[in-house]
Image 1 (cartoon, rainbow, N blue to C red):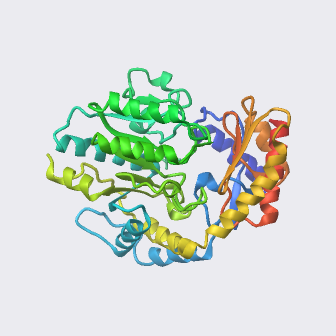
Image 2: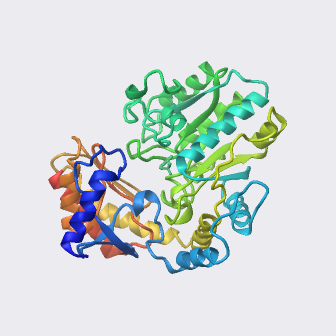
Image 3: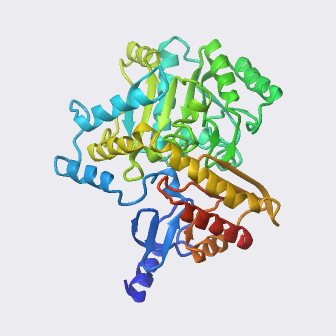
Length: 425
Ligand SMILES: *Cc1c(COP(=O)(O)O)cnc(C)c1O
């Protein structure tokens, strides 16, 4: 593309196109991507960047993956979409069946919807509707711990971290939920007791506890001890409160286990999947629940779950998700994720103690460098780009979750990009 063509597109972007969490018109120029292949993004000016972000946890098999491309093309040749009310199709049936097989025991029913935030809305609706149907209509609140992120629509926002999620912007608008402190990295009896106390104290008004298992993503990239998930499981079950695991970021091998729940061997009542579900090709989320939740809802007022999006069960998205799951079969992801984990440890540990660095942590194919100040995002991003790496820091965090197909040399390059961003940011 000519430099003039690029400049014109960027000017139009700034004038008209809203970007995540951005002002309008835009204040800084985004990078123009022309194509992507494997782990590389090709910019319109010809530069190539190793993608350290997997397009926000999603592109685990890299870009233009031949298997996913073929699944998409094959499905487009049959039908791209049909309504899901009164109609069904093989891609959705096959995907739902496989999700029931691979998710923790007890999850038997699958609601396919458009995006992660909607998937969390559906999970919350399931919990509220089931409590109502069970004769406990007073249970309308949710409980969680600080530091979480569950999406940008209103009910998910209400369970995001109150500070990081800017609840002050929404005083009087968001439902006031019940919060425990942020979960510590190590197991702490006092914190476990705090969780139990929260649940006991609010048992009559809580419909469900919702958490991200093992890794809190966009709320602060914090890791916690899996034992807390067992504590939550026991305490919620004792009070007829549902446990929702939001695995939208942690699912599909990212943390070194297939699901975050697998670190604790715990089954939730409701589970949300998204992001890497389609290998980053199309927007799709799935909310799974147990037979008990489904039976309560279906026997209650209304006789069914009060939700049904236009693009529910989109065949293109389901077909590519099915292909992505086939690529993950047979634990083929385990070694690649381990290699990335080792590469990130080797590459990032030397940054511990560097000026401005507060913490370095790695789990599975996730690497985080936390600074002692907010990152200068344009400067840090430009420094990584100069190293040939795409990163998108936020708050005080410079972090990476590369595609599982990233080779050792490219993991080392990502670590070098992070080091450059730390020095600049
Ligand atoms: C990204 C994310 C969401 C929201 O998903 P969207 O597809 O962006 O709506 C919800 N929960 C978690 C844990 C996430 O990481």
